[in-house]
Image (cartoon, rainbow, N blue to C red):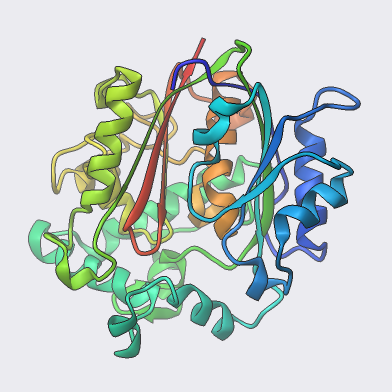
Amino acid sequence: MTGVYISDVGITRFGRRKEPLQTLMYEAYENAVSTIEPKFDAVFIGCMNPDEFVGDSNFATLIVDYFGLYQTPSVRIDNAPASGASGQYEKVLVLAGEKMSTLPTSMVTKILSKLIDNYERCTGATMPALAALVTRRYMHEYGLSREDLALAAVKNHHNGTLNPYAQFQKEITVEDVLKSKMISDPLHLYDCASISDGACAAILTSKKTDVKVAGIGHATDFLSLQYRNSLTSFNATKVAAKRAYDRAHKRPKDIDVAEVHDAFTILEMVNPEDLGFFKPGEGIEALVNGKTQLSGELPINTSGGLKARGHPVGATGLAQICEIVWQFRGEAGKRQVPAKIGLCHNIGGFVNNNIVTILESC
């Protein structure tokens, strides 16, 4: 991954937006570009399912047409790191976004459930239901309490209040979490990322800038949860992390700040352990003692994470990249932490197609 740098990033406010998805992507693009008429060798677009969410197919062509980037090669990528293809070009535009609020919650749940193994889906499994299974098992193995788990949502909502792009910008308490609607026992409403709209943009270049893509790791696991080795550890994350660390010549102790996929609060227990930050079961102590807060030893989800920043599924991975770039450049405002090396961890499906990206400030 030598020779890949990030020059500019941009993002929209996440939440329920009225604008079409292509307009949101253009807003993110305008927030990223630093020249009047930038030229790109290619455009890569991360978008999970515009066909069903907004009724548009051939989305890669639609975007370059809408942007006026005629004749520019454009590729839509579903759940893959667009920067991995950038070595073919000197300068590329990476866009990512999703508009989910056009459909009722029941339809969004149905679309997202298509990511689950067909047998498990036919027996009634949904994303929250699988996350609830993992939560119960983690509680059994490590003694996680319902009150301790709520601290993940409390922390990330606090960080969201400091992020002008976050969907949710209000403080919540442990009591608020426990009193919120039950979604899938023991997970409540405040344990789950919300339906959201939004877009992000990043410009990658072979010319050296102050942010380098130091390493990327990508790995998969069994689609079905029943075939995996553990319910409290995800092998795809562990393998992807090792590949990213090895390519970046870094180790977990080198990371200063991390954006970790927390579509459900339990994932902020499991994922940091799989990334090597804590031993199995130690994620509880790290959260309770404030190690992952803004003032902690390893700030995690300074942006507010998926939980508070928002989770327009196709945009999530690039939003994490944007946050780390802003942290490097001292542009994170009141959520600023000292950072030279950052890690982004994003997942596809129910933690079975996972990507880890390590960025380094030059």
